[in-house]
Length: 253
Ligand code: PGA
Image 1 (cartoon, rainbow, N blue to C red):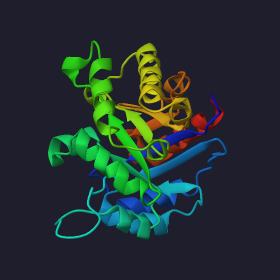
Image 2 (tube, rainbow, N blue to C red):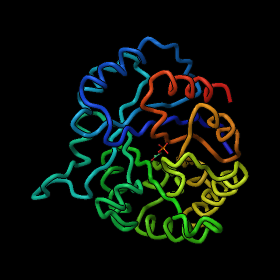
Image 3 (cartoon, rainbow, N blue to C red):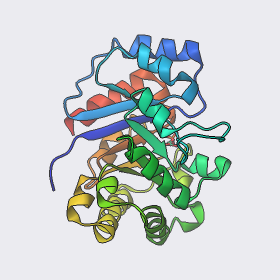
């Protein structure tokens, strides 16, 4: 497998107002970040994308979107299109996060359509999948089903632009994580499933991330697991010092 950069991506969810984003970047912009081997970024709510783009001073800081519509234009009140994200020069967008599935009714078919919308505009989809607490003992069946449905109508060239974030729903914001061995097995299973759905070249190009209760104490151990190419981080990404520390760790694993 080719050596790839690690991804450290922060999901700010429905946190932070203008003043908090100003204060985050005031601190973060001054912190030393050795990011030669890391691609990192933060996803504020849509209303602050432009502000975050202006406030980030490091050229290497990416600003990501938290979601996108499957539609490109028209009568879709409350939505944001891939075309608009492209207009802002956003390069990555989270889709299928369990909270958008739960509260905004997005299912696996909808996630597939969002991959098409984003990749048509050269925006990399960060595709979230993950099992429920009731599927915790054997998550592979649920994950396989999710991947098969999401990628059913996706072409290899679109799939190879994706990152896949494995986020067990029960681990998000709970302080609990799967064992390191389980994270490694699951990341490997996701890579193998993508190989079956597409081919080895596509599967090796896809970055596989882990997300769910990652913090400064467990980030390094998780990043060291085979087939884990990065982390999608909620709570710990709100604090500039914590996330800078995780980026520095990722640069050296
Ligand atoms: P958490 O959130 O790091 O706060 O558990 C992760 C996520 O929802 O992406």
